[in-house]
Image: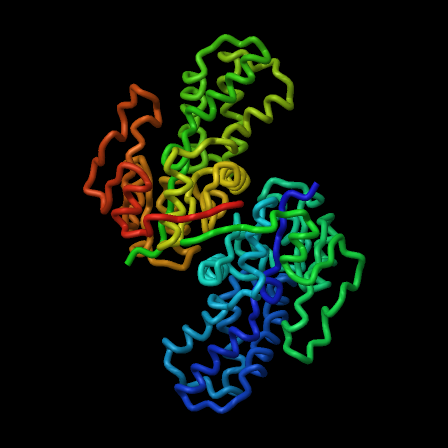
Length: 242
Length: 242
């Protein structure tokens, strides 16, 4: 029986593309930079997998994602006129990932799911990043797991296995929830249950990937409300004041 | 400015003595054991500090508290007629620490504090233990920190320092909240702020320790509501359904 839901965060719970491009626009205004902010978000995110790959392959010791985000921003900074912004503005931009907005169903959807299951983030983001983002976007996890707690980056099998071990459950009692087929595929390979949640606008209106389930996942849902319905969760959760 | 509150859990947030003795009484009834259940709780808890000391001193590699609780129960099992209970009942009893009840102000008090601050457990308990306990006793942390995440047992200075680092804050921006003067003293030594919460019945009606603050802590409170008042938190938090 499924007891815990582990969530991918970037793209599945929060809208990184809108968040990053919005903050880049604020910096652009200040420094009179005239570049496409969506492309900026895509390019910065484009550095994400290669930077983690060095850690996954063992060519680099584990470092938390905030550090990779900083290095990755340096890699593209010249193309976006960011070489001469102040250190304060640079650090603020690196932490844009700490301020990403949830999709419109995320906060209440997670609460509905929380009423029946343990819910934990299982992101490649580090603790501070997910904590700040969750506080801002009202994501009420029971636990923040992820790369910094488990010591591995997804989709390494250990990332999933150690997460299940930390919550004291067998992989078959845990379900990975993600908008990305490859994340679910890796989770399934270690014995976890799988739920695909469609986020058709993660990459903007021209998105071509992850528009449909590529395997027969245990659950397929249009958003977190739909997933909560399918998992038999409470339909209404009232909260106030926090 | 204080941004995060880190909480001791056993004794400060939950009433371990009542929880453990209640579960021992259930086992006692089943196996017709006739022993003092409060004394049982005290004796089991009495093994706690010495067992961790082996890890703190470097004589033993870090192991999570569930394992120490199991070993510590073995140490006292003969005195309490527990040598012949079933494996299933033994494991259930070891996990009694996962089911400890909160003090009557804990759940709502934490919610009030959460409305203004990051709140995280910083217990010597392992993740699974604190997670299960929190789910059962409605303790809505922003983050579960503690020995298994930071790799040290309190009161080692690293236990506090790594916890602050994980949430991305300077120790001076974090306040340790505890019912134990020695915990606060160690936290103060690494630069954290300190709040003493009186739990005059942690050790029962004859409690002699921690009945008053032994240093001039930054805050002294009678319970979490009192602490929330003193920290200027919202007075009412409504929640429902989770």
